[in-house]
Length: 447
Image (tube, rainbow, N blue to C red; front, side, top):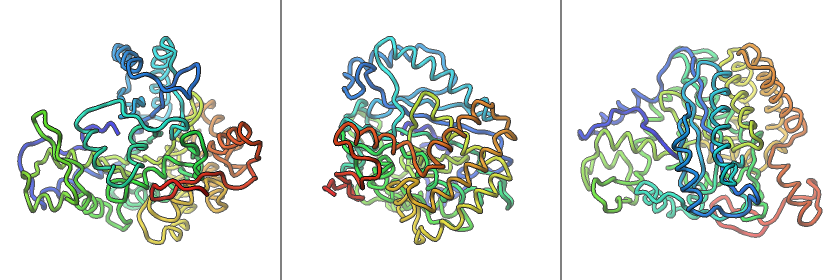
């Protein structure tokens, strides 16, 4: 949610439709040998004495003021609901990426601990309703725009957290590390990552019926804002069309008045109508930052579909698995061959608004086909990690996750559901779907 520039040069010069398309095509896929890796880790901030309690606004402000004095290599930002995000600098190796973020997290946790606060790795706040911490024009406009599609937007803004992995776009030419292959891999493997790392089955203290309620919230805010483009052989062209046809979230102002939140205005139509003013290069740059597809090309590929993970170092497992399956040629080929048959379950619809992604978010690895795909992908990743120079401790962590969850057709969400059932009515994990469930379009209904 805390989005830096997407790569278009900031400019007040008006942009035409053709210029906008050319700019997007020019910056979305910067091809070359995969060299760099990055990760963005988001966390819910909770009271150490009882994570169910809301943290007063004043205590969050004081804690974040103290964090501004801490020297970090990663960028530290605050999300609309007060979640914390650490964004690593581009790293040349997986080991470097893990080491940098781990050290920064240790420093952040130490400061928060002094004020009785801690970080929780869950994809969706299981206890509290969304409450906005940041009141800025961007988030005021975002809330107004997302409210048009229901309550999912506020939960997404203020009650969700993720692990986002950034990999290079890949080679221009074909092959397992080619940019077209990696684009397709991201959208099909993405469903497997949703299922394997689902960790958000609760909302308002009760099961929702979805193992990744966070992914459900993204789906609820609509394909224009949080969907990807259709997959074809020319990712640059399809992404450019998608950006131009996506709804404009807001028209920014230079004064103190609230930003305009247009209804049913795509960026393409804005370039043609040129009202309430002509869009600029800077507006195009900003527009890209208001789109939240599960895979976002920003020169590199930003994989945004993974729930925040439990434990202090749980986030390193999806980072390591994703890095191995994208950047090791042998593992990338295995992963692509493994997930390619899953395309039949998309019904030709873009992610995440298709049956494959829906099943992944709802069922996790209880889905037999997703479980088999995850098992093959984890095996390929574990074989590749030593070739990437991964530390033995990290390889062991991935293997432990595989044994605890993937091999048993489970995901972290199942642990949370087991705990909830034991605390409330003693039901076992095999007792059937929890209640209530959440309708895919945002309406809460009893199951």
